[in-house]
Image (cartoon, rainbow, N blue to C red; front, side, top):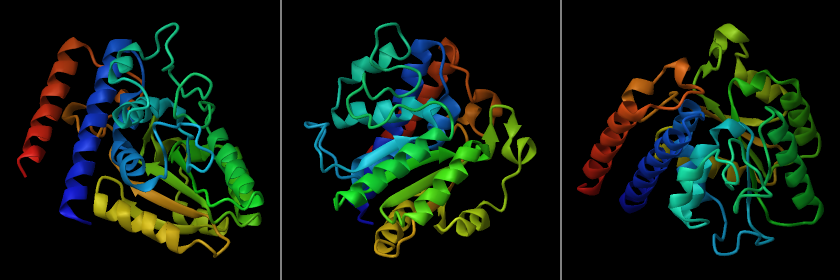
Length: 283
């Protein structure tokens, strides 16, 4: 990866994290932990991977993105604002009555959102349908779905995977945010889905382990996805991540799954992120 691109992606990820903290603090509710853990993957998708046109959100030939773990909407909203889909100031309206930025993505309200999500598991099914539709229309469109590791408890996930394998959806890239925590604690304690890689392989996927906070590793994963085109098998990237990544007091703490920072916690987090950004700028 070129150093210039790596720096750009790192800066984008920090700005996405700042947007997550700003929006959830303003809303006094939301899900910062799982939004922070996927911020790097979201940065890579929106700033390097997906073929999109912010000036034309409904461009028919665009790649599609489905946030199956819909509670991580603050991460995607931040990326969309940074890409110019809407003004960054709108992040302050998260979860407010009348806002286009509700607690879970709504495709009828928010520019750049391809699918309304929130009921866990259903996002992957809709992504599979989009991928199947692109195949049917003979369109060169990739579909990306971001799931949580806790979300993999849902039976509908495995129905969608069986469908994706049966219909040879090699234009579907499934990202699993493996931060190891969900609302009730450790995923291994709530309902252990390991070995996740073997289960996904059994359901017909190419599977790759990726360091979810390392952009060179993310680049490798998405390159492998493109190499798998023509194989008739969807690709699953298992992203090794940390809940709350980037805000020290939130890291690896299940309690930050669905709790917003108070005023002091917000100031501490933003000071940490600003310092990180300044360090990156001088590189």
